[in-house]
Image (tube, rainbow, N blue to C red):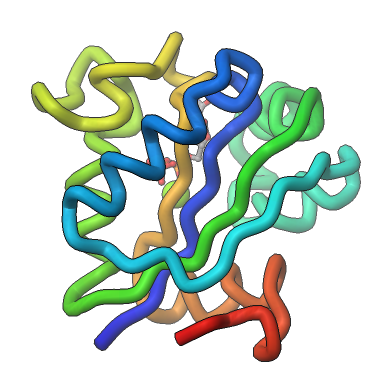
Length: 138
Ligand code: UDP
Ligand code: MG
């Protein structure tokens, strides 16, 4: 059993897509064991994406991620990290497979509607960034 951190990003929440994305997650057989809506500050977005701080897109990414509300979810299931990455599709929507969240909803490479942890090590940092142990209904 594995857990992963999923975010529904500002572009998707702004368009009211959180229900549809959560339905896709549940249809894929991943269990939502925690959920909250919040609006990150610029500093919080910078902390969350600290791994990308040297990248050219960092300033724009963190401005966008703090531009409006997001939904944070903790997902649980067998092989949940890879299964949710597969459900999201490629970072760049033009390379995302049919039926993925990003193929359906992403606007461009930055405003790509969703985030998912990329490894067990990342999930172990990203889940507690948003949720305390008490908030995980496993
Ligand atoms: N991103 C961007 N430009 C790029 C690559 C990434 O704006 O050239 C944004 C995009 O929102 C992406 C996030 O930065 O989801 C984190 O990038 P990463 O490579 O970790 O992609 P992900 O793991 O989200 O697929
Ligand atoms: Mg990533």
